[in-house]
Structures are given as C-alpha cells and as structure tokens.
Length: 115
Length: 112
Image (cartoon, rainbow over all chains, first blue to last red; front, side, top):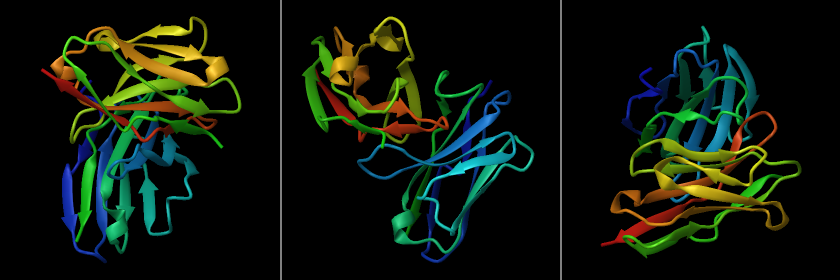
C-alpha cells in the first residue's frame, strides 16, 4: 500500500491553457474524491466516483472541469481554458466502503498556478 | 446547509503546554465528525473521527476530541504540545453522499 499518489505535484500554466491531473488511489479503494483547496481555506468538495461511476458533482465544478475514472482505478481531472481563479491545490482522496465511516486517505495534492 | 466553523485562525502555544482547538458545526442529523492535520505543501492526515458511542474520542499522536451535541462542538485537545505538532488543523463534518465539509482551518504555532 503506497497511499494515494497525485501527479504532478506542481503545475504552472498560462491562462487559457488546458491542464490534466492524475490521481492513483489505494488499490482496494473503490471510492475516489476530488477536492480543491485555496489559500487560507479548507478543502472544498468537487466530485466523487464509486468505481467508474461519477456519483456527484459540486456546483463548483464548472463546465470547464471534467473528471474521469475510466476503469475504476486511477482518475484524471482536466481543466480547460484555465483562469487565474483556478489557482489552488487540488486534492485527491480515496476510501473503502462508505465514507465518512472510515475516513479518507488523501494524496499530497497538485498545486496549480495559473499565470 | 452543513457547515463547520473554526473560530481561531491562528493559535500559538508554548511547547509542553496544553492545546484546545475549537470546532462548531451545523448539521441536520447525527454528524460524522473528523479532525485532519496538514503540514505545509502536504495532503491531509486523519487524526481522529467520531460516529457514535463514547463522546470522547482518542486519535493518533496523543490527540483527543470531545463531541458535545448540546453545544454542536467537537473540540480537539492535546495535554502537552510538541514542536512537531505545528501545522494546520481542519475539522470536518460528514454529509449525505459521503462528501465532507471542512472548516477553514486553524494554524498552530509552537513556541520553544
């Protein structure tokens, strides 16, 4: 068990470019969550998957954001036409069984800076 | 709507002193409550959680928290703080659909 891995750790992009982040959950975890954390704030829920099914999306997830988990293993989060307001830490978490009973295991996050 | 309030943005304590971080929540049903810790540039580590039963919950690293339904609080405590405890602490409440709602966090500074 190597924990939840996120790649890249840091990403600097120019406004208007597309970016994609990857999350590899703990292998036996069937639930995968994406959160966004801006400076001075707690994480905010974006979306989550059970296996390959995307079960819920937050209103924060505008149409420029898309997330996938094609085979129920790793997940990708893509942001199209990035804006400066997208600058944040993007956190991935996974869990087994029905959270919140068992809590989440978080990755170290991907820090996005849009210039 | 569910919400979590952490009234203290920053707290500074001396090493060896006791610590209490406050958390108040708003939740319509029996809450699932969590405390997480985050070091700079890192993800979140679960300290402890409460679902039901004993209202005093023990966690890792010597932390404990007490659920008080009448006060809608879930305060985190540690009897003796170590310099390595300096970090940001987040309280969170479980929501239907299993997502968590987090507070804005409390930054703990430890004086030597």
